[in-house]
Amino acid sequence: MYSLEQVRGFVAVAEELHFGRAAERLQMTQPPLSRQIQKLERDIGVALLDRDNRSVSLTRAGHAFLGEARRLLSIADTAPESARRIAQGLEGRISLGFTAMAAASVLSAVLAEADGQLGGVDVVLHELVSDAQFEALLTGGLDLALVRLPPQRPEFDSRLVFREPLVAAVPARHPLSSSPGPVDASEFEGEDMIMYSSAGASYFADLISSVLANVRPRSTQRVTQVHSMLALVGAGRGSAIVPASAATFAGDAVALRPLLGWERPVVELRAVWRRDTTNAALLRALDGFGTLASL
View 1 (cartoon, rainbow, N blue to C red):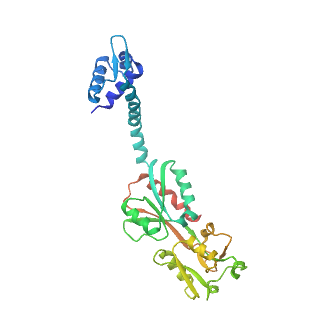
View 2: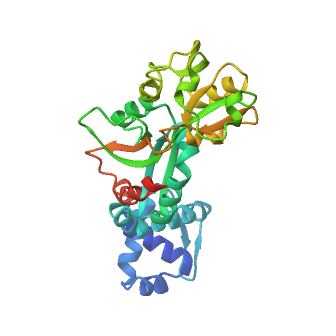
View 3: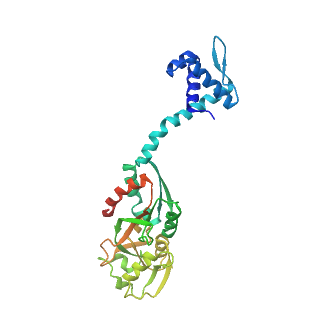
């Protein structure tokens, strides 16, 4: 196995094409440098230099090895500083999970925070439903998750990063679409409603159940994704209650109206991570997430 010292010696000789000048550049004498090159050639198993009493030149193998040797030395020279920057959270990688609604509401702000604080950190994005994000956190597939539900396992820690109000989503031709003021939940009595599935969207299912606690819809359809819900509203299949950021997905066929009593921010989004994380970039990024709750 050859050493970095031997590689540095070879690069110096290859660039100077003179053992004396290369030895002077390396602040050593010529005989040890010659022995280094000879040992390097034995270790590699091929001649790298043609030399006689008058000149030194590179063999074809030497030309090929020179480029790789320079890259090797460059990596070796920068590795300590890179390790220090990673330890300080200035470089590295964060795998970030998010839902479609997180993308609509807060993802751009989170990424802006990351860009401002962590210019040397690579943020890798993964769109996943909340349950899949929790599983990925446990297995190491994610460093950070943006989810609605607070974590239920002791391995996780979390921080609130965003709140928003609820709004009523009605078909554009529905009488409530032109309501002059906030829509009261009681106005959905006897109406067709698009609801959340408790199996795939338990956070919203529980929240909307509390909003409609005293309301009896005529019929209900149940889905797990807000954009699917809005598509059904736009198709005239019923009305729904959605987070305000759903405006991103609402087309001309859907009207969003304030919901009486729920104008205050009640829908929460949390950043969740493992308590035992050693990712310095993530720990540094978490310092900025607290500023997002007021957006």
